[in-house]
Length: 358
Ligand SMILES: Nc1ncnc2c1ncn2[C@@H]1O[C@H](COP(=O)(O)OP(=O)(O)OP(=O)(O)O)[C@@H](O)[C@H]1O
Ligand SMILES: [Mg+2]
Image (tube, rainbow, N blue to C red; front, side, top):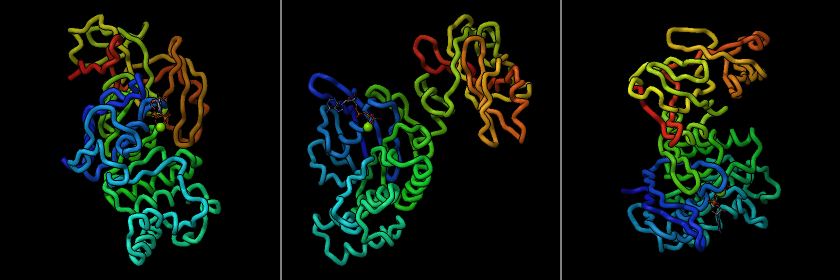
């Protein structure tokens, strides 16, 4: 298949294996985000695709061509780094033109390409400036421009936004998404920021300790995490997790029973971890909810909603509640109502998701 294909990709540094055999198909034009905690092997995997790290074992193909032994410059990929890596002594136009000159593109063609890409990125007025005279966001745009002018088959991004402040990061995130919608270039994007992953990705790859935990669309991963790691990693604030035991029709958490519909009868006594997303509670009871008694610790207003920090027994939990003006009454909340069909169950030993309610 075309696109980027990783099959059994392994990376070792000396005797230490850090990527343990990764299988991943990135379809043509797809935007795939690798996300995971620091040190899980995201950059290493990306750099193996770029050709900046040797592949210890496994196969890498781009558009069906095996790339393991192909030099970086011949892979037709362009990489955008966190630290921009611009030439400080060259102006914006020359920074973007640099790779094209090396490839001996005719001068006139370089000029029109630079003009086009500068227009797309809103850099037209800055072409004569040096990087030192640009803002962080503008520098990041130049770095992207340098990648775009080459019309590569694949864009590789390694945390391109992490040097920017929060506001600019949100803005540039939207720009990258628009750019991808417009150019449709196959992209692999590395971040440890789960919001960036959720908002940008066609599909997210959650990595942990040199392995893939789960691959899926943002909503697949959010709604149906394969295990506790993925459940805890995606979503902000993270999913509340609490130990429980299954009864015939509920998950018993201490003295509290969260009613669950479904085929639980064969699993009575099974130890589970019960996962409740902060969003999946209401303040009013209904036929589809089950009450959870809490002691309020802190109410944090966010505007249209508030974060309720509460204790359930000894467990700290966080819930989200809508607010319409006054937050004072939220301090008096002494139970939340859990939307029962959105509760997640995980095996307490393996951490794998359980679907007992099919
Ligand atoms: N040159 C090297 N020699 C030995 N070990 C290395 C080398 N480069 C990376 N590693 C190790 O490989 C593992 C994966 O590193 P990698 O840079 O891919 O992580 P990452 O997921 O990108 O993390 P971060 O979010 O912090 O950038 C880490 O444990 C790291 O210490
Ligand atoms: Mg990294």
